[in-house]
Image (tube, rainbow, N blue to C red):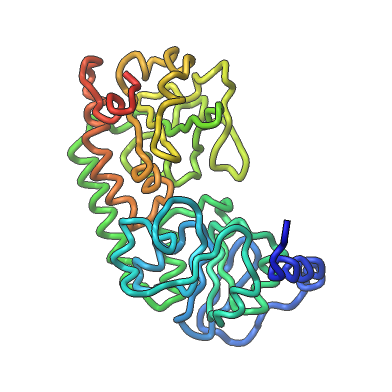
Length: 333
């Protein structure tokens, strides 16, 4: 199979990355300094030309009024990797859409003054290479690769782009939506909830640091104890035993999907052993709702909340006979 020259040269770059790891960080008297998982990054001035390598960081940047020069593709069939809740903020811009591994050459050709690596999964070697092009921001050191909360990410990017006032307004507005929703549903508070996905014959559940679980926590839910004690790759999900799905048997069970179909889930025999299934406390998230929860951004969460509220209300009304619309449509009943 033909390998593009860009990939061949990238391999050459990475082969010598070890020596770059020891390169001194820029130590000029920058006004803006950021500590993160790979060290410290400085900016002489707020960034204007930004490359977004995080799988979801385009949402935060667009919310701040910063249209990225390039966007990292995650999944979904949406123009420039921007999902419907964020599309209007893209305007007429046509950012470069980067798929697969990060192309050092493509990033360099865009001459950015900031590279966002939060939630990108890039290695420290790649970080060192990219830092030769422009300052690189990674997740704050206290968070896992994909576990930086939406508001912490937004505030970091706002500082880096000179849009702090805008970020605080957005955070206040979204927190207000969460508070209003909790006030409308005091009966939800303190209940357990789990987010799970079944695809390719494997059932997996999302853990505490994951964006999907963070949304549920904002609504007043907590993970079931058994699930809260589990660990997994990068700290955001864990695979479950096919013979034992009990860790996700919560007061509320949200099933996520990749392609929006639930055929495999509907015939999953072990699902029927769960009380959440027997008592009608399941809801199914189609592709768009699953995407909104997976992004967990300041732009996607308002969309998710609007759609989730009636589903959760039906699931938790205490009457097993109440039909949860999404579960019925997905054939889970």
